[in-house]
Image 1 (tube, rainbow, N blue to C red):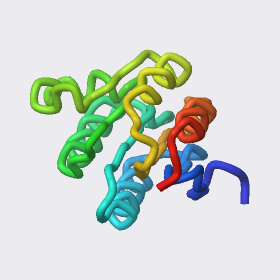
Image 2: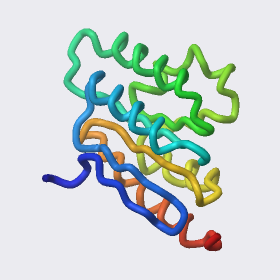
Image 3: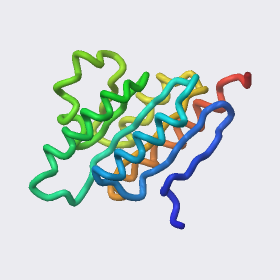
Image 4: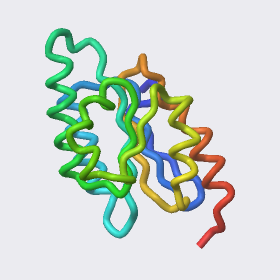
Length: 148
């Protein structure tokens, strides 16, 4: 199986679910359900990147998934691309729990500085977003955190 399809990795106390090979509304809902099962007793960080190739329905499909992400109530919700405007209606409600950037390289340091190093981090986006570029910053942050 190609990399980026529900790859679960442990970096110290940080758990990373890399699901950046493909994304559509159905697979996003599956990732949200998986995040909920991985979460008990831990802080949840969900990182959402654009679902590509949705055509004319892209804006409302991103907003529909954004609503499900907000309902998940992650301790930190990070977004790039089409999810930035899709999450705008919830920006005030999410407050400092929402972190956004133009792309993955810009998001990486913003996200890494907010981690304690013991979270469950879920990365979900279409392949063209290359959201996995965030992983080195997450791993570097986890390596600076003491083991429990």
